[in-house]
Length: 291
Image (cartoon, rainbow, N blue to C red):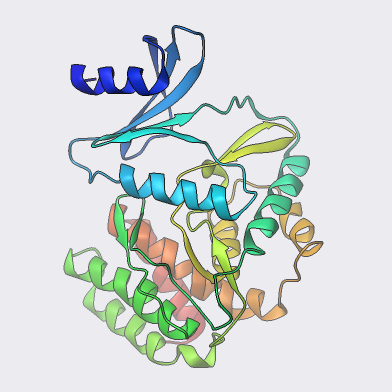
């Protein structure tokens, strides 16, 4: 850590840094557990040299979640160019997978109960954000189908195609699906605050409960987006969905068609980042939908 940043950080925290220990799980950033002279522990995230500096946006997103919802998230303690420091949430892993899934469902249903300001339909956010290292377009729309088509599906598919990650024939098929999304997606579903990158890897578990949610990619949109992400990425006991419905009903059409359509978003994110087998998963969904 550069001397000037270290001095600013120690001043902000009110204590000297005495130890640093690497933490696992950072795909685009180096993550460390810092121990301070007064025995407090904090987490420092520093984007790697080949990755964009997303620290200011992550700070904003965590603060939005903290101020608008009861979702447990780390407290932002310090942010400067190239570094974000958060409170440390002790987590020992999962001891009871069913209990953790039920606790996650309670928290996520509470998050999804948060609505945007105003009485008119609103989908998006007042700023563009990131999902991982990739830009996430959030220009608001009053039509969810339009927002998902333009800001999610086509935006990421186009990025994949331009970088050679997506075959042109598959891009054409995605465009054909996009043109008919009105047949599958509601125009004005209830708008919920979304985590946006929601899977077990972005949850901190401690025994039988979730102590924190990290690495958000927030916006306001259809709650089924988060649910589709969880279903795709796994990591939670299947009891999660039954537990979620105790707080918020899940429409049957979600499992029929919408789940796979919404899963195209995280799959295309993975295509853009990694290519490979994720292209085949995208193609399988397009096949199943008949495009």
